Amino acid sequence: MDERAVKRKYRRNAVIYDRLVARPTQALRREAVARLELRPGDRVLDLGCGTGLSLPLLWEAVGESGVVYGADVSPDMLARARERVDAAARRNVRLLEVNAEFLELPEPVHGILCFFTHDILLSPTAPPRAVGFLAAGGRVVAAGVKLAHGWRGWIINPVTIAYSLPAVTTRDVKRSFRPYASLEELVDDLHVEERGLGSLYLAWGQRAVRSAPSSTR
Image (tube, rainbow, N blue to C red; front, side, top):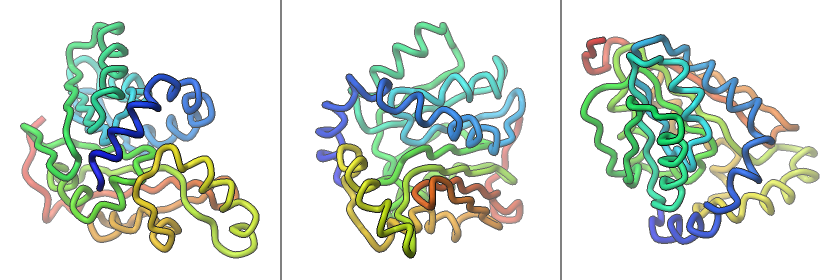
């Protein structure tokens, strides 16, 4: 992942990001968070949290006794997320300015959300590093843009590529048909549903209890 390129892109995007993204992704975002099956007191990581659009859904799910970690490499996007957290006076949200490839957490988490984090999922090291902090039986949910196969791809892929250019720095066409593929090796029984004629996906799975680090609630 080209950290400098990501920061440069999102320095420009931070100002208009919410206005462009919030409403079109609202339904999928809610479904993604629901797939985490969080409970009060859980700990959850929003990996690539951006401006924090998912944070309110996550802190509502874990309650005041839970903890929400939001990690992002862009200081400009994270500043917007911090404004959102401060406005809600949430004391159980921890925001981390960090490249996902070097993520560190002080404790295991019960869920990881990767929402529209194409560059992170295509990184060879970021997904396994994040899943390494997932507690026994914890769940990973990813959602975002993908390229469609077959005749649908001929129609919709040019549009998908065009509107993704401002946000994506890792342009790997072959892997963009299955950007969630790295998770298949990291969690058990990854489920994938396609949306938008194959231009969007929602994927979720659970880390095997036998290999996960111990966790206490």
